[in-house]
Length: 65
Image 1: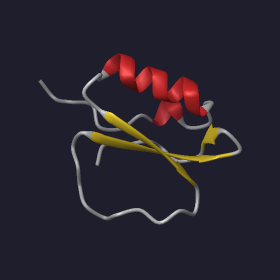
Image 2: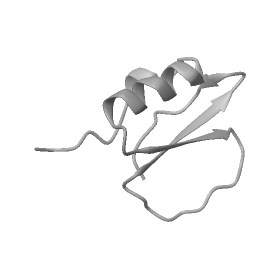
Image 3: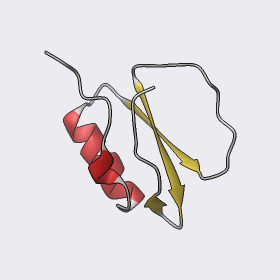
Image 4: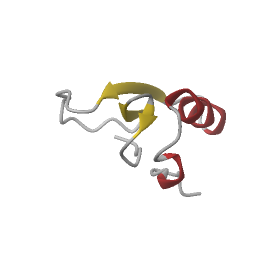
């Protein structure tokens, strides 16, 4: 079974709604909320999804890594 790795449907959603949906689908994932423009590490972590936010909304397509 292939694991979902991208969530284009969450772009534009309120951050808390997006976080809840990710946790409901994949409880093992660690969700990081990151203000747009912040520096992040470039390592790949299959158990992490970053939500890049601005004004309380997700502005980039969330993806694993």
